[in-house]
Image 1: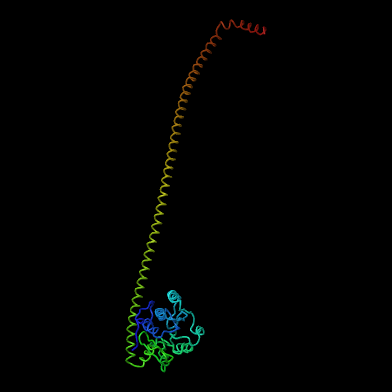
Image 2: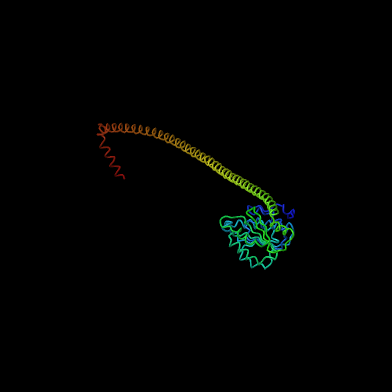
Amino acid sequence: MIPFTSTTFRFPDLVTPSAWVEHVPFMFWLIDALRPHRFVELGTHAGASYCAACQAIELLGLHCSCYAIDTWKGDEHAGYYDEKVYHDLAAYHAPKYAAFSRLVRSTFDAAVDHFEDASIDLLHIDGLHTYDAVRHDFETWRPKLTQNAVVLFHDTNVRERDFAVSRFWGEVSADRPHFEFLHGHGLGVLGVGDNYPKAVASLFAAGEEEHGRGAIRAAFAHLGQVVAHFSDTAHATRRTEATFVLTREEWHRQMEQRGSQITALLAERDQLAARGREREVQSALDRKEWQLQIEGRDAKILQANAQVIEKAEEIQVLKEKLSVAVADRENARSEEKRLHEILGAVYSSTSWRVTAPLRAAKRLLTTLGK
């Protein structure tokens, strides 16, 4: 049986949906047992396995440099994904592990030349899972391994589609120290040397004996289920919290929208009230103007009436004067007629005819005297 330390029983800090989460307890155990100086992971995706290793390295205070190599674009087995996967991992990783760890955006082949030979103590291969791809990754990175390095292969217990890690695992582990877990899609643990710390050597020895192999598999499968349940619960809680935040944000958004609508309605009401007051003022002014116009017209009417009355009185006076004049004219005519009658009587009288020579002599003397 292998020795267990308290590190094995910790829960991962990073909670992310992953098939690898069931192997997190073993990653904690292996980091403590192997105590590597350099760890490289080929295919990191959301970071479940890689961050578990970094967590253990930090917890144990190991002097170990870590490198996660991935394009973070996905493949036909993991699926293709957008930039959010990388950005979420980078945002989590940088403040916690940047002192000893790097995320390297690269293909595996392009990154391999940046590592010196015999420099990697722990290699995790979890890229494309076809036979050719897994074999190529192992053979390409084999020179970079130290004499007694350990290599992890995920998905050794998947036998569907064109997953062929199990086939390559059967070949590469045939004559080397190894141990295989069957839970969590399978995890192969391969020793490329023959001199390991006691705990790791005990693991490889148990892999050769059925009873010991079964007990270790059962122990880590149980621990993996506990961590998976913890991860599922934490992830569900996070989703619920995110939904609550979204619901609360939506509520706040709706409240702000309602507030804006109320503010707009109040402003509209104030505008209408102001317009109403303006109209009332204008109406009052119009009424006052109308009243003034009415009063002005009434005054003009009164004035016109007074003028009419005055003119009527003047006409009456003129009429009276005219009546007097007419009466005077009639009197004058009557008097003139009377005088004509008197003159006619005089001119036709005997005395006027007898005195005619005298009047003629008077006119002559008058003319001579001039």
